[in-house]
Image 1: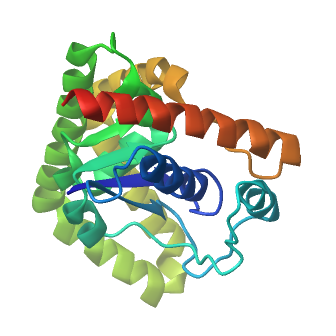
Image 2: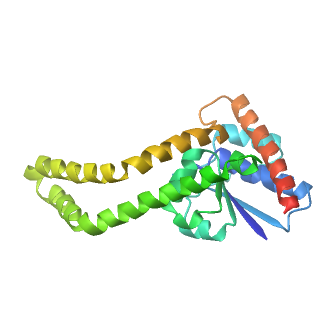
Image 3: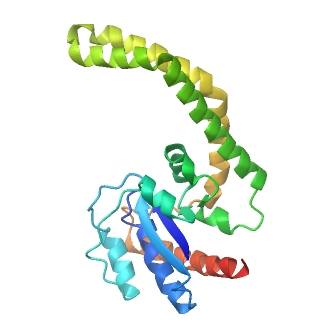
Amino acid sequence: MLRILFICTGNTCRSLMAEVLARKIFRRFNLEGQVEVASAGLAAFPGSPASSEALSVLADEGFDLSGHQAEQLTQEKVRAADLILTMTASQKRQLLEFFPAARGKTFVFKEFLDPVSNKEKETRFIELIGKVQEKKEKFRAEHGRIVNKLEQERSEILKRLQEIENELASWQNLLAEKTRAEVQEIKKIEGELAQYDIPDPFGQPRAVYRRCAQELASLIEKLVQHLKKK
């Protein structure tokens, strides 16, 4: 059983539509027993309903998602997934930063289906994220006690608030300087990966949601063909 997890920001629009449309399309291709799909949000408010536009578009496809409740991405969901597909490059970056275990199985949806995607760039992207995380951990190991002490003093001693804020800024600047080169390169690669983004339809007219759903359906059909080649 291949477990696919679709990811967006709030799990009220894109990832939800991808999950529902994927389930429908996989059923059409008789892949129900071979592929399992789910969705979640990087910054979801658990329990939030789907956007009204997404509900309307999915209703056109025969689905009643009025009872949908947004789900937050968790370590357990990451571990359970075999393939994680994000809607944008920035979501991919955030996911890999928060969940190192997702490396190697997380892709921007369009990137995953691009037969000429740059594998060297993908490898470097993950390597840079790893380096930043290593430097952050090293920084916390070397200076974490000082930073924590300052944060406690900031909340306990209001009269020293400005002084503590200045000291914290100094430590944060030091961390930023240590990771500056990697972060700049990450942003550059992320900008190039933006070509794979599926734009967020949130707040847009219904027609935009319809186009988003059509694009997702098209990508999922390509995903089916890709999986059949495996």
